[in-house]
Image (cartoon, rainbow, N blue to C red; front, side):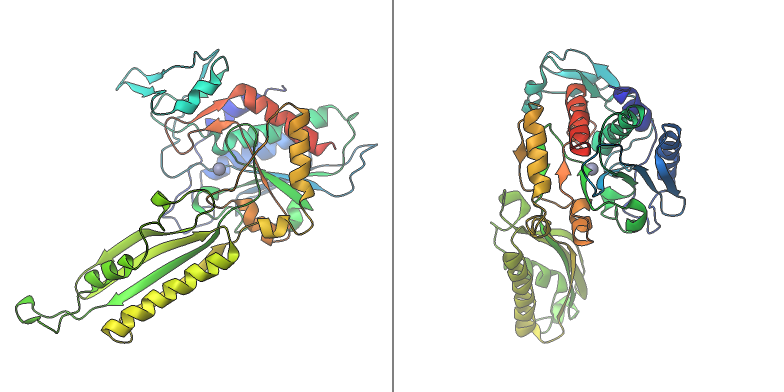
Length: 407
Ligand SMILES: [Zn+2]
């Protein structure tokens, strides 16, 4: 359909990896290369109000309503241009495996690097399909350039067929999603959507409107360093205090021991000496009340440390990061989920509605006033050299976007 695969291959060839270490916006200047390319292509295909934010690296465009379009509200579609900092996307050499046999795929004879069915048993479901894979030395970037290519293909199709009735459509491509900063500098007036979908999920049929509530807690510990030879009853070893604090968290409250709707405390960083230590946790729960309770319990643990070792031993800093968009979606916006489910069923796609054990740009957008569930892209094994995209899934998802844009 309208060069979907060519587009995708063109976009994954552009290195757009974002960076956790950088404090600039965007976190890497190279993301501008894809932004410029997309803005040019949108202009060439005749989109309206195409704007490229040369400072913060966002691309916005509109497709005005056509005759007969019933919708007066503007529906938006977003995808992110950056790729994960976890694996390089420099010099992606994508390859198409036609009529996949459902077994192992040798990505690279050197090594060799093999996408093994034993490691990824879900690959069996793709037997007979065409897959786009890497040469095993980089990630693919289907996350989220599959979403970008699908939105661009939808736009090209609608602009080439003005006889198709639809309401106003808004498009945005964003930077730095992978480092949690995808909507930090978004211009909602330039975007202009009343509601939207991020196209940033995985397997065909995925539809998500529930995510975690999220906070980060950092605890700084002040110890009392004394020569170990004369330390009895005097030393407070800050590193040990961190371990004591961590012991207060149940073993069944960690990411590695929880699933589905179970929340957790995840120790993400620690450093310590005798004199000083610090530890960082991320706190996650789908349920807002349980989320608040988890934060209170963390405050209680820190208070207990101070009871044991003296006031001022432990200092807690908690920062909320994002909230569960379900609150916003279920408050008068559930039609977005219903519309997506209906459109999928008409296209023969089985909807897979599941809570995300993470967050999305859509979650933050929802709380900024643009309710925004997340749709599938047709890719898999994201953030990995074993990443792939299924061409048949991508084609179906482009049809899904067209159905949502034209209802
Ligand atoms: Zn993504």
